[in-house]
Image (cartoon, rainbow, N blue to C red):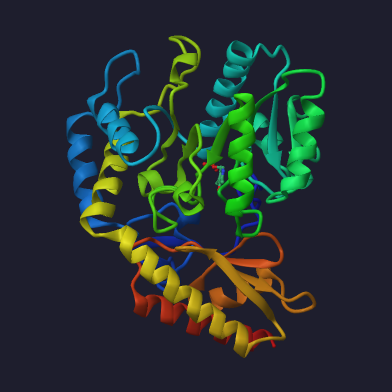
Length: 397
Ligand SMILES: *Cc1c(COP(=O)(O)O)cnc(C)c1O
């Protein structure tokens, strides 16, 4: 019997039915240590009592109203985001792809109005990931995600990530006959593409050139944003401020919400230019507000810094003990990648073996195993996770 659900995912034969903190249980009662967190989503872990209480209370008061009306919870969440970032206005939607769609539309309008470009281009990086809607997947610089869905959206060009000379050359060729580029869209650290941290010198140069040409610099913070780096935003790790940033995954702690936050360019969207039925409803915004409040109340940014450093050193030691299988480790805070040796087990093989040891991990491409645990994780969980991973590696040796 085929599943009634479409086969858009290669699914593991595992049904998770209950969660608490960093632990998940399957329908057979087996327990798993969760280093995936719904792929960087469950910021406060599973079934967090505070989030549960606030959401229950919100459900009992008001769940959804249209954006035709003012939504106080949305205004409060927008204020919470702008107060903690370099931005001044926020648009709400429901996912990372949608947040990037909003950014792309705003950038095109800005390009038309400020640079007078009729046919604007957006420059993005190879190995990037920006989502699966048509424009977001076109922005994604990985041909494997385009195949079969052509024609792609026009107006995108790609360059190798962290490659200053290649970026300068592409920009110069695009601008050879006058203004043509509306925006540069970049992840501060590439997540799906293999956990590749941005190079501050490269980002500084991109910022300089964007300033010189009045090109918008947009950061896709859907994976690293909302505390995962140990700062509120990945751009703080780079020391380079964007004109706009997108967020989603970790913002709602498991409730779908996305946002585009911008600095000084919000007025290019006028009433009627962009919209979302569900975007920023009271329920989702209560989730976002609670996540931000709890990150602060529990000092999670500091803890992510410390626990990220612990995970880094545990993984570095693991690499030393398994030089035939592991090549290295990289990442920021609690977004970390274990880089595999070619010829050894692949990321999907290691993820499967780890599952048998009661540990959930997620690949970032074929050659990297990714750790994106809840931000509430404790040192003993990290030690246990690396121990279980080591058992899995031994079973594959
Ligand atoms: C996951 C992700 C997206 C897409 O988010 P969805 O909510 O799945 O649409 C976009 N950008 C980055 C960097 C991501 O990690």
